[in-house]
Amino acid sequence: MTARTSPDSSRDIPEATVARLPIYLRALTTLSEQGTSTCSSEELAGAAGVNSAKLRKDLSYLGSYGTRGVGYDVEYLRYQIAREIGVTQDWPVVIVGIGNLGQALANYSGFRSRGFRVVALLDADPARRDEVVAGIEVRPFDHLEQIVTDHDVAIGVIATPAVAAQDVADRMVACGVTSILNFAPIVLAVPAQVDVRKVDLSIELQILAYHEQRKAATA
Amino acid sequence: MTARTSPDSSRDIPEATVARLPIYLRALTTLSEQGTSTCSSEELAGAAGVNSAKLRKDLSYLGSYGTRGVGYDVEYLRYQIAREIGVTQDWPVVIVGIGNLGQALANYSGFRSRGFRVVALLDADPARRDEVVAGIEVRPFDHLEQIVTDHDVAIGVIATPAVAAQDVADRMVACGVTSILNFAPIVLAVPAQVDVRKVDLSIELQILAYHEQRKAATA
DNA sequence: AGGAGTTTGTGAACGGGAGAACAAAACGAG
DNA sequence: CTCGTTTTGTTCTCCCGTTCACAAACTCCT
Image (tube, rainbow over all chains, first blue to last red; front, side, top):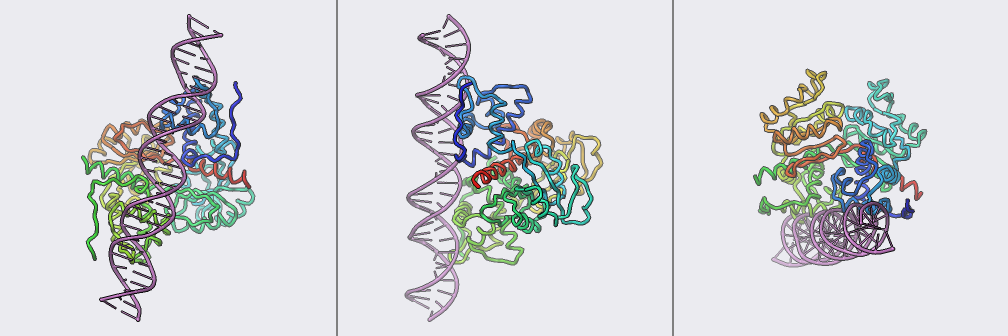
């Protein structure tokens, strides 16, 4: 095998590309499980639901990991992407708010298989103490600081009702969490150095409704 | 009040703007509940977490609903955005897959308050029959066609495991569903006229991990 | 009525991402 | 070894979205 180009690690990958890397990672895992050892950009793009030119350009930001005339080695590329995203590391995560959504998250196997380890489930409701979800004991929200410090947690997940979310975020930020995944339907205010990503179930439906309405209008 | 500009209804609103309209809608609802009757683009932008120039440009695609020197009438603008998105209508929705996530969705009050009405919960597992979630009886997946036809359902939600998702989507499409919200971690193949939006819990975490890793590297 | 102060709506510049298209590189056949 | 075939990596162009900056329009005060 030829020496691969491995660009210096201080390059910046476009945000749009970063958002697609996990999709490629999943597609490669699927291919790997099917026993495929090599694939072309065309095949991989098909599996990921994107166009092949875009896929190749995305991969080119990581380095030159393919072989012209042949394609990509599935395992090798999969590892390179995983390393780039950071999921070859272990990421301790706390989940706050153990309603249906919090439980769904705690049970989701897709986290552990990608390096995310749920170190604690927290809930403010005393009635939930001693409950065990996904093999993890539910603990009082007040233990947040202790847990974050002990496990060196950088990523927090908020699955509480909207009214509690800002307070939870403030406490998380205060004790050193620097990335937050927010499921509460509210815009969080956090310092600039903290990354927040928001998943809003009803917004997605509303976007569908808009297009649906337009379809109905032109039909 | 002066006559408002109301552009012809066959205009096309940029996709990026459509994705933000639900956020503005929520911010306006919050303002309204706080008793605010008028707001400036600056205030609304702050509540929505965007910059005010972008907000004004977004709103300008809908029409000219503000008053220079004054701002926007909260109730009036809220109604206009709701109408534009289509959430003043009633949207019957079916949810397939009643695991933790499906239950979270069924219980989510943010749906009903925005015109989405869950007409059925479906699950392939016979053990779940007769269960009642969020006041709605869980019915066998085979009833899909019947329900979609009876209630004229256009929007389907998939909250099943990945292996079942493509089959569910195929059945939905076959009986007339034209918009799908997919929570299963898989790229769905559907005809071009069907809209699919995907929410992937682990992808969001992976994007955070990437940035977290970069922060750690430069620190 | 007129002028000062606000705030919207939009034209114009700018930046980033998408897609087409092609040169460079690897492989295989003869 | 040479030529044809395949597929990557990259350049170039176009389009969409963001942001700036300002004219237009409205209110309030004198």
